[in-house]
Image 1 (cartoon, rainbow, N blue to C red):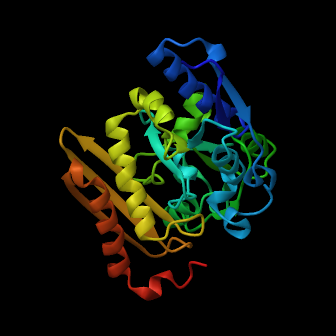
Image 2 (tube, rainbow, N blue to C red):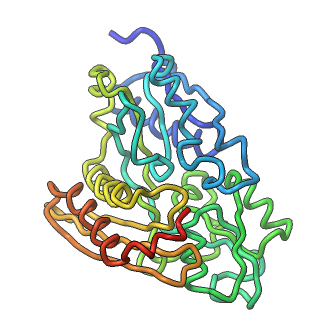
Length: 309
């Protein structure tokens, strides 16, 4: 019988805490457990501390997870809650992503300072984004505007926008919804127009792979549709060696026993892109994601990746 509180690792941003609370609340409901059976442990990560440079320059996505994963491997944490799109495709040995909560809105939100929509920005306007995928898609849609690196928490980015450092920025709509801030979005772009990052809008839970007790605890809150969709998207990302150095977009949907997938790779300047659409049986989610990634790599040819440093 569980007597000590379960220790949940998380980053300390308001969004990360909202996600940890959502996971905790789902577990409380699934197992009829009181709140005091959970302890949310906030850890500072290198990715949170260094906000003046692009992630690609300082080590990529793993900078948001290293400190948390070290505590998880040591046994100091029982499990950790993350934004799935921030997770590297290769995890430290002994850890696994076992659980995915139901996906929230996967779309990207544009927040304009003086205009409502991206296409209303005047020529020469400045848009801030930390994501190479968003930067490339913005440049593809609006090659006439300037795109700059724009990092920090949701609140920090919105403050910079209000101060006039940029004319617009992009955030994941799911994050705004989880923070109760969806009203700040001036435009929510369709998945067809602005393909999301793989696993965008999904909260995941990381645990020790051999911890059967935690696996049993988490199983009731795993969403099967989301699990299969993210499995497909992460396989696509892994086939392309996806990291914060690569503009890659991918989105999968489950329909009964089938899964459909759309993926895209772009050059950082958005001038060239290759996309793919496919569908298959759900049991082949990982297989079709991997195939789609390898197929786009083949179509693009080796020269396409020369600028991906």
